[in-house]
Image 1 (cartoon, rainbow, N blue to C red):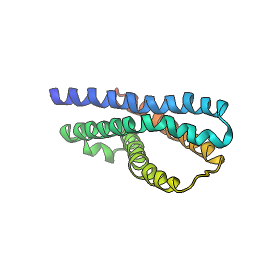
Image 2 (cartoon, rainbow, N blue to C red):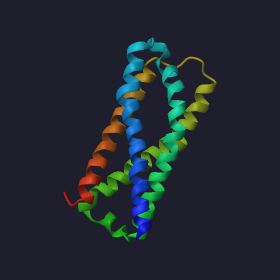
Image 3 (cartoon, rainbow, N blue to C red):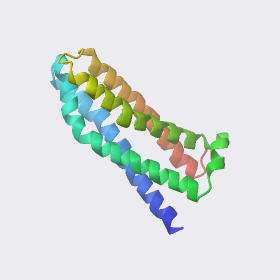
Length: 154
């Protein structure tokens, strides 16, 4: 069972850096850019900062997924996905899938599309900011559910 302990440690550390990073970007970096950059420059400013975080986020999301899958497989917990009381496992999986889609499919496609377009709508930063807030909210709900649920609260 040492492998389960190692997987749990890896999972918690990965979620800490992944969701903690999303929280920092959403609650600190984006408002700072909104308050300091001209409206037309905000998305570019965000992109310059995000390009340092996105590769790290990809690693943490992958590690969270690998360790989560390992714990479910090794602990034979697949049946939990059929029980409403384990809603938090569905929430964790949903948040993970959304971030996987964004980090590995949507962002790379958008980056390619933007390369050929010098002008991006100033409202795009607002859309990105709202999306980050929604994703952070979903992630925090899943996180609260996972910690509470794994300790018998739910």
